Length: 462
Image 1 (spheres, one colour):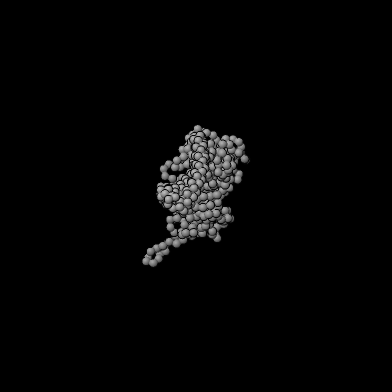
Image 2 (cartoon, helix red, strand yellow; image 1 turned 120 degrees about the horizontal axis):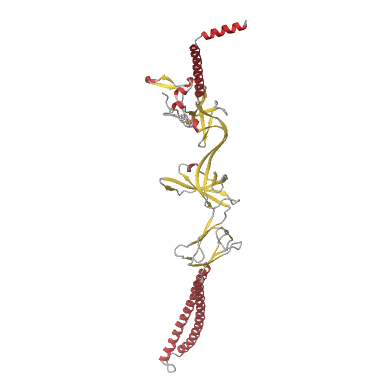
């Protein structure tokens, strides 16, 4: 019985049309392809927006600038006399003074050839001795003049008693009177000579002091305790001191206290104030952030290519000695900061959807206003999402559409902005861009072309 049933079935199958079976199979395949296409399209529609979560954290608003690390106090040591450098002094370690040498106040830094100045000192000493000898001679002459005046006075007294008479002729009387007058005049001359020689001594001593000082200037000493950061002469070099003293050494008083001189644009200088905290980095120590504080703003602005900048001094502690003078610093002046606030990327505030991407409940609806003109209501107005100062709009995905959320804007650090809204919570997704579909690209699309995002608004759809 079973064998007869199988044979009858095979006969029936052979009688059917194989073409009909093939058409039915093709129809099933087409239905499957269309279903998969719709499924993929729905997936693409649901994933057409690029979103980021709203997060909570700290925000720091800063002003960026560049500057140079400078010693807080610098002493430029020069030469006051001309001559050849014959030797350098020794630092506190006993080594010849050079770059980076630590010296004490009074340490000999260099010596200038003093042969000429030593000879001038010897000559000045001789002149002083000669002037003093002249004083002694003038004093002796003055004594003689006094004695002669005394004798002339006695003779004149006797002559006056006798008067012109038979005992004293008229000529002798006149001679006694004249001798008395001459003696008085010689005394005055002697006194004047004594004063002159004493003044000559003072002048000679002044020349000696000047010569001795010039001789002392041949030895260059450190005026303060510090570190040599620049040595500008070599042994054998001749320095010439004329109107300006030539610079020999540059000495920093204390490298544990440094400054950063920053150039700040005029648009930002209004946000800089003394005592303001500053952070900065230097290329010499990557990954290390140094702390500082604004000391003062210099008022002598400079203009370069019509850009006005001000120099701001920042004090920083260098107790660890990692910073050295004249490093380039990248600074950030801390203007304001917020802690534990909701924040979104600035791209989320700039992005604007096309009208057909907005959820139907939030799309603009035309309304007639005064004068028969129609207006729009619902979506934010304008080309961007910032309606007015302090307010903005972010967009959240709702199915295949997006819906607006009005927010109040707060502090911004240039990439993230503080936002406040009862509708926003930490972790909610906001749109920052739209994923560009392959079909929207003009021209031929290559499978090796990376996927692009569109920000700041979508292109019109046809």
